[in-house]
Length: 391
Image 1 (cartoon, rainbow, N blue to C red):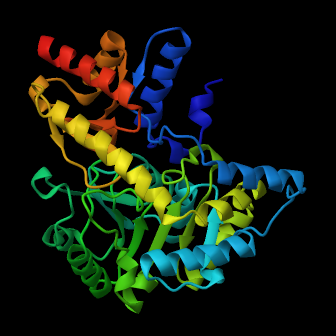
Image 2: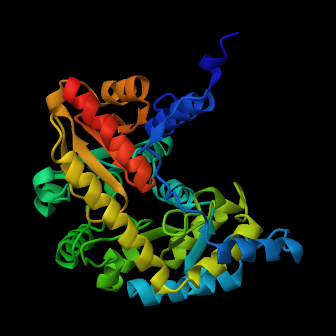
């Protein structure tokens, strides 16, 4: 019996994650004893903070291991409301908050409750690999809007207007961005917000990297420009990146009551509540002082600057300086190789793990993560330079 022929049709158009594929291959080689330098993973190299781990231990010891409300425990939702008000100038009530099993889960839930077959979702590219796959699983159509490295890969409002038609339902916005590291300014977001309000387009604003911004820039939430755009925006965030809690799986969204209730209802019949212990850890994380983030940003900016200084002197590669997140998107078109070829050859020949840009919609690029230690970054830059010089 051919089992493949009996799988649901919705899976036929879904591609495996290119980021997870190369990471898995690198981990396999490392387990076999090879000295792998990993500049691929989308997670910080520092451990989850002790104050977060202690809160989780206390939750276990106190027996906080039962079901919770589907959309999150009340005290966590209240603290998320406070966070939105303080950091993003957004007023939410707890019934407008849904806590999920990671920001990715929040995004997928949002697509599921908004997208009907035939609906079009506008996605600027390069894009995070999972956006189009989520749209496909919801039987929607992803329409990609090309951006330019000359504008740090930010969406041009005139290009947005050209792509809007009667089937356009959602715009996906990611600032700071994975993979490009671009950060939208207040004026740029206001112009995009006005277009979306005029055309009644929902905005899914993925703000998971909001705390990781460099060069004195400030994060701005697109939903903060007034009631009309706020009602149309689903603001998604989580704990994975800023708190180094990738494995804890905790994210959340803020939206108008109708959308939040729909997401909660969907979650009732899928995952139910996010992990109870992790929610207690999330409470502790949200109480972290601002100095915690400034220390991390300083460290990451130093690593970014070191990598850029090295990359800018290498042949056949051109880095784009990121203003946020912890990735450098590098143009490798002068190698005359595809991004997958570059990534595979670097892994096999130099034991250096990078992410090919093909999965981000940009096959002339590779993504390099600067979340590794200074020693690993130096070793990785040495290996990359040697490989490119001899290519």
